[in-house]
Image (spheres, rainbow, N blue to C red):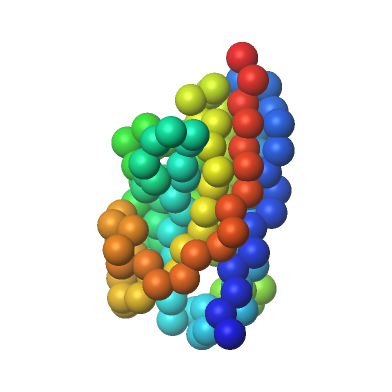
Length: 124
């Protein structure tokens, strides 16, 4: 059974930082591209970041480029999202996802497995 468990969300002031983690089990993590998405209340789910299987390639949504950084530790079966210079508009539930394909993608349809999400709230 594939499980993705996010942690690290919380309440932070604008300009602050948070680091999300996503622990993955039940699949061969080192062969799986990973992504982060987010969904704010009343809005569609939005691509945040993605990383290739070995971590050599990354992609980011336009709204987070230069502020967020995705990384992974294949020895720990964990993917991370470092979020800096947070803004109130970053407030959302953040989801990690495991790709069904062999490369990273910004398209949520390319992801087969999803975590339960972790809430990030940025106060102004």
